[in-house]
Amino acid sequence: MNPASGIYIEANLAKSPGGNVTRTDVARVAGTSVAVVSYVINNGPRPVAEATRQRVLAAIKQTGYRPNAVARALASGTTKTFGLIVPNIANPFVASMAHVLLQESLNHGHIMLLGDAGDDRQRELELIQGMLNRQIDGLFYNSVDRHPYIDVVQASGTPLLMLDRITPRPGVSVLSMNERLAACDVTRHLLSHGYQQVGMISGPPAMFTPGIVFRAGVMRCRSGGCPWMKA
Image (cartoon, rainbow, N blue to C red; front, side, top):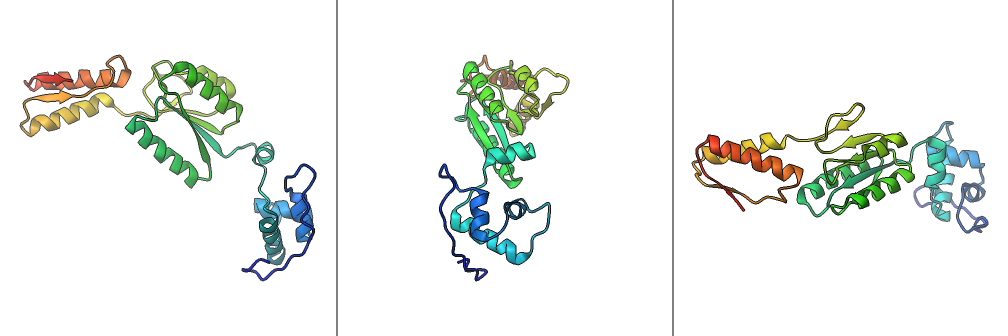
C-alpha cells in the first residue's frame, strides 16, 4: 500500500533471474508496460496519467527497484558524475575547496568522485585513469606539481577544469587565485597596522605556491623597510 495515494498492490514479488529488481518487475507489480515505467522514472518523454504514475511509484517502493546507473549512462550519454583530483586532502584549503565543489555538484544533480593523490605523481596518474575509465562527465584537477597530466585527460575527450596555475595552453580552462597578490595584500595589511616584524610559516619551499607566497612577502616587507622572519 502507498499511504499517500491509498493504492493497494498485490502481486508476485519474485525477482528476475540474477536477483536484481528490473523495470520489468516493476511493470508486473504495477500492472503496466515497461515503457510506462520508464516514462515515470525519466519524467517523459510521454505523459502518464496521475493514477498510473502513482501505481508505478508504489510498485517501485514495494519492489525496492533502483535504476541501473550504467544502463542509464549508456542511454543518455551522461553518468551524472564528476571527478575531482587533489594533491592532498589533508591540506585545509584543499579540503575546503573539495567540500564546496562536492556540495555544488549535488545541488546540480551530480555526484563527485574524490581522488586524493597524497602528493604522489604516480598515484595521481592512476586516479585520473581510473576516473576516465568510469566515463565521468568532467574532471576538476588540482595537480601535485607543475606538470599535470593534461594530455591524458584531453585524449579522452573529457571536459577539464584545472584548479591551479599552469602554463597557458589552448583548450584548457583554469580557475586559480593570484597567490602573489594575496601575499602582498596580507603583508601590506600587517605593515599598515604598525607591525615591524613579519613572519611566515611556509610549506616546502620547493613547492610552487609556498615559493610564490614567500617571495612576494619578502619583496613587500623589504619595500616597507621591515625585516622578514621565516620559520
